Image (cartoon, rainbow, N blue to C red; front, side, top):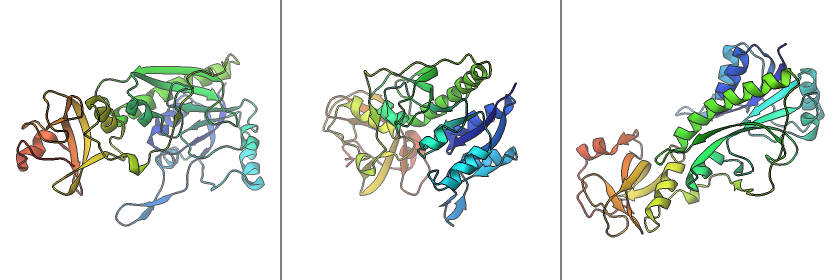
Length: 306
């Protein structure tokens, strides 16, 4: 017997889970997402990726600015959902919402909890040099990502993997793990386990003030910094006074003054070791491979990246 669900999500990351839930035959009574925001050159209002996906299935879409009012909570309860599924929604759920569905509210969170609770778990895992990540489905409670875990899916973080790469892999894992959890919920066999009190870390929201590259740090730190911020907001340095985002890097060979160009492969010494820039983006331009950039730009050895 299929479940009647409310789905709550906003960005691209949440879309595969919504699609999988619909394809598995569950009844989605309502989709909650953030309100449209101005975007693009014309600053036209743009619906969220989840809203666009929901409309493709003719699902009713709700974009409340808050869930704390009695009116919003009455509307939510009126959906008569068995459970709510939350994936990167972007709003905290008050207790009245958490308590409304009889089977509970379940969140798909992109980290191996209790590590990286909070807003930017994918970026922070890579920036910290973690070798493994995953998705955990937890029963939600009032604390920030503190609820008991029902299921998990894990994956390796490869040496040169960017936040964008890990995002796409975990989005698929989230969809797969969530539908398995829902299948168990249907059969009343879903169990949960409290999170450990050991190893709790918080994934703070990214700040633009932490995006500039510091070439005096060890190469591994710089490498993790660049890939952890790729593709957005992007780690950056200055080249000839203009901002250059560094999107992909790998281990390089050589030594020299930190931030100087060593060779025609864009190898850059760091405070310890060196890395090679693989992909970059100049202000106002599209992302490009380093070799394509070097075909059209003279950047002799000794050039300085600020």
